[in-house]
Length: 356
Image (cartoon, rainbow, N blue to C red; front, side, top):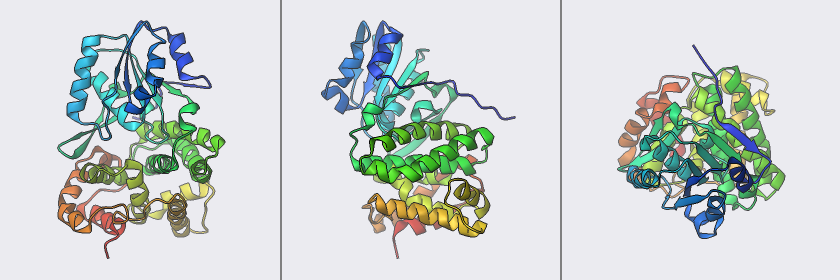
């Protein structure tokens, strides 16, 4: 039996402050990237309620200890809503805090980057002892997502590039995942083709393109929270925990290698044709999809290999067995379209490593 639901209310076309004012909360607890606490934006959101407290200790790759610290403060303040302002790390941190607090309170998410899709998913990625652990539970899905395009209008190009490839990876892996169906395919395709054809313009500063990609990020989140992900994300989580590289950048490095090694060309070929990339045979369409992503990666000035991203080849060799073991334990492998083996993961790592 399959089911599809979107329990998160998605709000567009209104500034986040105005939305919070209309919601009329008494006390809100705000989890914020430090940047938005320092520039006063988080405080401006807090002032839409009668009382507020801000937790701005969020760091990239939030740890279990950080979540425990935030959860204790959340419980002590006892708000009637939890609001999060930031990128994927802040959102994952807040989702876990709400989950472990034992309180059933609304979770309002205001994403400030276009990539994670976490504002509509059942996932939270936490780090412990250098390993990323995906927490997956329907209770993690936010109550509301406010897509305020003002927050992405001035993002630096590097964040646009990293986030954009995260969306592409979400959409592509959802398309081929075991649990994919017509509903998730519709969202995955729309997200993939929107980002594929608009990411270069967004990178160059086109605000219309950025608005489209901000929406597409949420679509891809809806797609993969229902269909699942695969080996690209399993390896990206393992590598991210070990080398602390941006998640989207790792996806950009891994995704072409995944296409070339993961599954027969038919499903990738279908996405290639549906997205307007095409190819006269399945093999050619799949190859065109892979090469198109490589060209896009180059245009966005992203590294082509792990070595080019700063990963020491000697350290990568030393850690490879542990990385593969961690990836095999990742829940994303459960919905990969083909059985995941050590040999498959080793081959993808070899192609993505840049090691001769």
